[in-house]
Image (cartoon, helix red, strand yellow):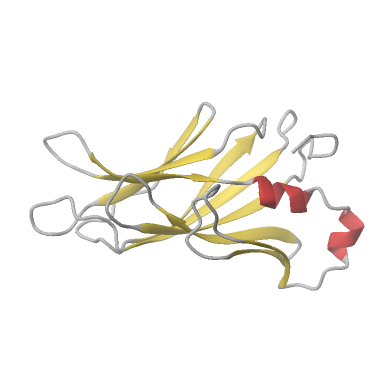
Length: 173
């Protein structure tokens, strides 16, 4: 993985109270992630405004100057898929923790919270998000509030991995 700063695993866990886009008072949602030229998507969950995807998508970070775009769509058969909201995933707090001295992190007990991120006007969080040291990895679970839609949230988890990559040393956050 030379040339990459690191690998970001994004687990799209579930949608909560997503918008209704079908005539039968439900939706067929799926999630699309975009960062640079990378575009990934989950499977479609039929007839469910509270879908559970539990899918892991992997992005390779070359730069850190662009957020991860998250879009939710309702799959339609005969027409264009309907938008169900969008958001951005802010990875900077996780990357700030990843820049910590490796020895400092190795002294952190498993399951310990390294940093707490509060919802603000500058992020899409709907609740406090914790960055936790789990089995030698930094993991952040977050509830993301969707914008440009009447309702809906996505629960996801991001995990940083820089094994066999360049890493973040010398990178300005």
